[in-house]
Structure formats: structure tokens, C-alpha cells
Image (tube, rainbow, N blue to C red; front, side, top):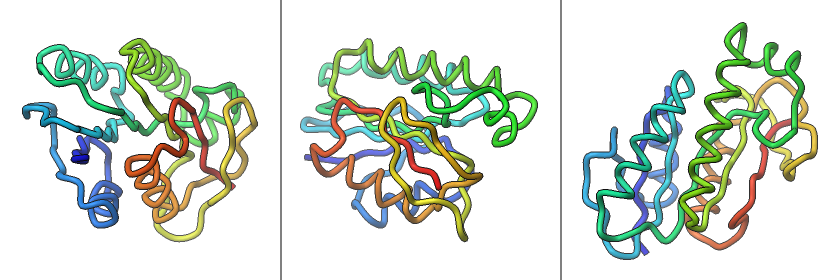
Length: 171
């Protein structure tokens, strides 16, 4: 298994995941997929719809398909939050973010590859939640702890735990 991570996310979450997993980190999709690839994706939450188009194009362009895709998503993509909660977490553009993120999750699902979606509240370095929320269970709190998120993402990359699931991490 070879873990590679496309890191379009703001902050240093990607660096933490690399430190935990030994993944190779890329800023974009301009690389050849090796055999036995487990692919992590930290999308830019300002445009996850554009990011997933690049992901799909990369999967289509490579002769080797990933064994699994693990992606980060904002809360709200699994019937886990209402619009008022999303606005409190992500601001006035929450509705647009939700639509774009739902599209990204749907496109990853339609690749028909094993996947894990990890849903998050706004990520903070200090404090924040560490409680797992299965799909459909409401997410609570105001933030997700970055170290806990990196650990969960690493677990999803390195094991079959959470495969073909959407799992939230909040308070």
C-alpha cells in the first residue's frame, strides 16, 4: 500500500497526516498514480466542486485506479446538520458550501471505488471535539480538534475501518 495525499486544505492538517502515515503529499492532482495507491484528499472548502472534478479527471487519466479514497468534507453532507448550524459553523456561504460538498461526495461515491468520507466542523488546533458521529446522526459543537481529525484520517487511510462510510468528528 502506498498512501498519497492531495492537500488543498487551508492550514497544516495535511502535514500532520503525513507525519502520522508517511504519506506523500501533493498540492494538486498532477502526478501519476502508483500501484496499490490509497488516496487521501483534503479539498479546499471554498471550491470542493472544482476539486472533485480534478480528482475525477485524475482517476480517469491514470491507468491504475486507487484502492481506496479518503476525503474530508464539511459537516452537513450526511443529514447531520441543519442550515442554521451550517451558517454558525461556516458563515453566510454555508448553503453554497453544502451544495458544492454534496456534489463532491456524490462524485466520489459514483467512482465506485472503496471510499471514506470524514465530515468535520471548522478545524481548530486547540480544543474542539473528538466525538465520532455516524452518518445521519446530528453533529454537535462548534469545532473539530485538528490532532483528532489527523488521527481519524490516518486510521481511515491505513486500515479498512470506516470503509464505504461517512463518519463525522465533532463535539
